Length: 512
Image (cartoon, one colour):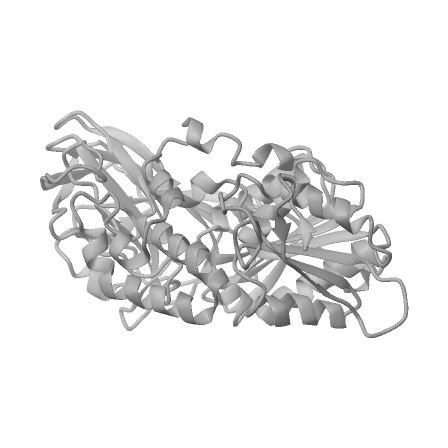
């Protein structure tokens, strides 16, 4: 029992090598319990490699005292745990941290005022800005919010309660996500979760509710060597890449590994690479053994080529190529001569465009065949010609859209796909933006579509997909301008795309 900052007892397990000697310590703080997968993958496995591992349940979870108030107490409780460590006879004053997801957030919280003993961090698919996990441009990541609510509420209670909650959520997902009003529609499946209510009712990152939850400023001044791990289909990829950029600008020693993973597959199928990367970093900075480090800062998996590439930095500053849509559904590098209306579609919130694949927290995450989605009347596709030579995309992708609507209230979802010779269309990366237009008056919106490392092979085609949403990944735009949490009204909207819209790709030369 380790005292938290307010004196609450934090249940803590201590794993250590069955050998004589002096070993550094790894601190792993989790709101998800201390059983599977944390005990074997972090407690036992790292102890076998020569580390004391302190695995702790965060306040209000896994039997620890106090109440869970996500993101609010982790800095203070982390510092309190380090103070306790200083009193332990086996603690040699050399400390590292490691862990994924919320276990990454607690590391950033401790690093906001890093103790002198902290010599290395390994943040695996971790967040530093909670609001950005739940919102893009003020649009709620609805499915993610529900999945996080279920995980934070039930996982620390054990595998059976988590499984039952997950099954209830899956079975009732459509009713929950189409409920009107949306507020508290999840209660029948997940129970009352006050902090989730707060998340869903505060879309503005500048709202007082979010004050103090982002620890971005800590990254801007951090000097503790930090290894970052992400996945191309991870819900936290953009935060991982932002962390790398901030640490590089701060002059902090850092490394980046990005694999072909979702948020969960990184510690499942991707665990051999993730564990090797993490262990090498910790040995280098806690044991003075740099033999396992690679020669470059960055290693990324290249989709379409199914291989790993070591590069000096991220992004590698490739040439940027705009691709333009045509009225015939083609995608071309030939710039248009005007901004005339090109084509339009009708988005109906009563039959919302579904989400398929991408960065989700469900089993349907990742690269998926989009042909069924693209056959819908409310999805536009623009496709380039079969390639006569490979095209390598390496870096951030974005779309510049000129859009007009008949109501002034709409969202736009934009996605990059790889179409193989058999016509299978697979999603690479995507993004969503909220349109702020006057009725019938076109306006421009730039939509960040995350980043990728992907090779479009010979015979494949580049496709740009555009729609009015991706439900239930994102909350529906109901077309009225009112909050989807409270309104019971909805209205279809006609969305018109103009010819000067462009898909911007970071084309890399000489990736092979």
